[in-house]
Length: 215
Ligand SMILES: [Zn+2]
Ligand SMILES: [Zn+2]
Image (cartoon, rainbow, N blue to C red):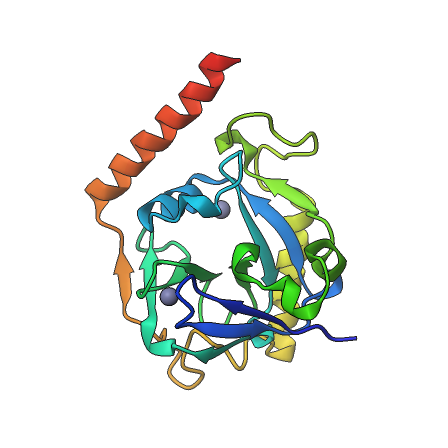
């Protein structure tokens, strides 16, 4: 059975679907890394972060993602010149997907934008339970018992294998976020302003400190 889960930005101008949304076609993870947190705060979409500062994501191959409406509203932010390509919506600052590049079989979408009700299934029934809690050294509060301080090796290997297979099967095509012919992203790439980034990181360290002084 293939499950197509619709997604949309907060205001509804950007819509799309995640095809083959299942545990066998992707990874259901939570990432607490400083970049994912910085990104959420930059977009003023902190609501997407869980109680530990984690972003819940479904990682799959680009050919499983499709944008239906609102491509013109999509923007691209990088947290460093060589960092991941983070696509969000300019209309309402909703994070849509993180990618590496046009020819890499990796695309990761916040589960918060996916509408599991539309497929009359729970999130866990569709994409399985969260398999990995990553980069917990940046998380705060009571962390899940199985949280990994860095990036779990098993997940790294899984992603690496997917990337390798993707080179052979071209599962990065069609890519919803890059032009298949030119490899150019669908939106101009913008690198975060350094000062703004520092401000946010300081704020994040303060948040983390509040938690550690409470315990
Ligand atoms: Zn929107
Ligand atoms: Zn992250």
